[in-house]
Amino acid sequence: MMLPFADWLPRQRWYAGRNRELQDVRPQAVTHLHDDVDHMLLDVSFADGGTDRYQVLVRWDHPPSDEFVAAAHIGSDNGRMAYDALYDDDAARSLLSLIQNDTEIKGLRFTAEPGVRLPVEAPARVGDAEQSNTSVIFDSAAVMKVFRRVPSGVNPDVELGRVLARAGCRNVAALMGAVEGTDDDGAPLTFAMVNEYARNSAEGWAMATTSARDLFNQNELHADEVGGDFSGESSRLGEAVASVHRILAQELGESSAQLPVDAMLARLDSAAATVPEVAERLPELRDTLKATGPTEITVQRVHGDLHLGQVLRTPETWLLIDFEGEPGQPVEERRRPDSPLRDVAGMLRSFEYAAYQLLVGTPDDDGLAERAKEWIARNQNAFCEGYAEVAGYDPREHRAVLNAYELDKMTYEAAYEARHRPNWLRIPLLSMARLLG
Ligand SMILES: Nc1ncnc2c1ncn2[C@@H]1O[C@H](COP(=O)(O)OP(=O)(O)O)[C@@H](O)[C@H]1O
Ligand SMILES: O=P(O)(O)O[C@H]1O[C@H](CO)[C@@H](O[C@H]2O[C@H](CO)[C@@H](O)[C@H](O)[C@H]2O)[C@H](O)[C@H]1O
Image 1 (cartoon, rainbow, N blue to C red):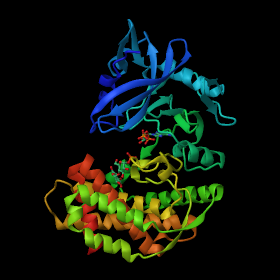
Image 2: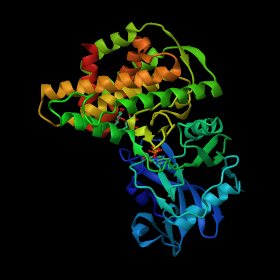
Image 3: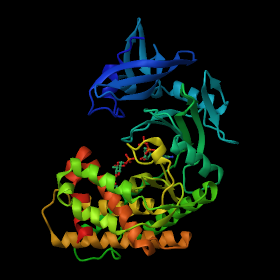
């Protein structure tokens, strides 16, 4: 197989190896699915000695519609032309049919959830979200997320999606099916998942930032007086998050553990090694975490990377999506039971982000800073009140533990922003400064 993957992969939006020197790409497994469609697993090796496994579906000698030819074109091999099959609606629909029929092809298991009818006749189209995988939307009825990097191990997105769908959870997009397999050592591999498509939904991030912007533009009014007040939504979002937590606890259990202060300190040290502003305040930040002391917490399976970009408002309710956990963490780490307060802290941080990112790059303005604080407090409080309605306790009753999780998230964000969006680094740094007082 001589397809030019080493040239093609780095040009894909979902390619995660941009800051590494790619050395070689080899097809590790090629499975013929049907007609002219092959499923390929690629072993990618890097100059730093690391490797990654990527997944590509290839349709031979059959370009998709004109709109997608350039995006789908991979190259030629032995006179045959290869295209990324996900851009081709026939090929995408045929994957749905394989799932609907619970097909197994050479270790690739296509399975539908019990009683599900997939829209196997629906028009299919690759979604246009900025994402680390590729999603194909089937006529606003179902969305198939095809994972691009395929690490060995249980994929928490499918694992928790299955548990929540089977428990009848209303606050997730129900899992409809999946494509799974096993690696040479018998460890699970997850290739794709199909979920109900949330029609007419809006992302929490877009709604929250619109609301904060409305307040910033109304000089004389307070957060509770402007048309775009978001606090009712924040409260309902708190209820939705608590409801998902409750179902995960019921279905998968709870136990006791110590607050993972050592892991938090290790993350802080590692962020300080790459972000000089964190290094400057490292002793105080370490002391703050250590002051939480040995604390017993209740742990269970949680979302793990919850923020306003991971929630969708449908006309009926809030949905939580993308249960993959924190990108960059090893799979087993992402599946480790943790306090639900980790997710609460993620949302509280996200309210800060929604308000403060509007001030990035603007001249200092005490009035605007006050209004941002007012919006944040109003929505954080509403979220916690909504959470308490369902959970039976208010997350703010556990202030010290919540602060530790918030600081841990700020640390993660500082490293994330320094790497991906340096002009937003100011947001977690200001939060750290406020926390230290
Ligand atoms: N079930 C769904 N219904 C409608 N839109 C969805 C659904 N799931 C995801 N999306 C949209 O697709 C985007 C990317 O999905 P996500 O699961 O976060 O992908 P990735 O893990 O590749 O980043 C989301 O931000 C959301 O806008
Ligand atoms: O959605 P992902 O799984 O890719 O999450 C990663 O990227 C997020 C950025 O989109 C990052 O979230 C941070 O920025 C958000 C606004 O863009 C903000 O709402 C979050 O609070 C903030 O943490 C997330 O941390 C990262 O894992």
